[in-house]
Image (cartoon, rainbow, N blue to C red):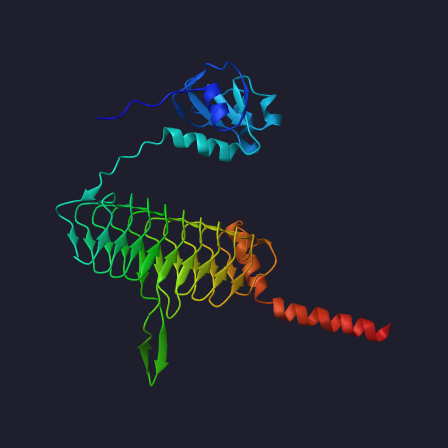
Length: 345
């Protein structure tokens, strides 16, 4: 049976999240929505100035926004320095998750050497292999595969069909979405006498506390040392992290990005969707790489980096592509003209 939606008073939300309140304290909120779709019983937010025009006509019961924006709002408000973060915290109150019951489902297959806390939950069809350790409050969803010598920290959640191949160690409160594979072989090959030799992948994967790993994302185990995600790293769906990569704390990567082997990404970095980072590179702290960029060299200074050509009309793009072929010739001609000019001065 579905639980009834929770209800919160405006003054209760203001107190709980230390926000400045404007409007009747007994205003009731039953849910959250966007500025455009919210009704009188819902809370919305304004963080992007692009949507400021919607403020005048919103039907929301309460809006979370900055002090400057609050002057133009005709409905009750909660004032925050960072409305988006404040809204995220409030929205969590309305999130409904099914409660996992502690215990091991009868259909699960568990090796006798595995150590599973009685407060953990092992779902139907799971396979837990030798040497596994699962701590209290951890949840393994349906058909999870936990391979040899893996460990799962307290209150981590692995949703359906997550695979930990071998030597994968998760910290506490790690969230892994369906279909992710951690600890598969890294792409280590040596070419010898007209054929490839496979390099043994003897390392593991270490995931810090409070990390999140998206659906169908893959993180390969290291060749000798471990592949490492420090605490509070967030990976979107369909990301490839190669062997021996290290990703610093609080870094976030958007979907379909990829990092080649032995690259070290710093802390507080933002990697846009579809971006690629070549192997054996260093990316410093607080670096932003925009979508579809290709990183081919070390980045040591913080800031925003881009590569590639911006989108343009196809006819114009074709003309520019043709001209790009003559760029080297044009550069040489300009240099020759400048040299000739200097000689005559």
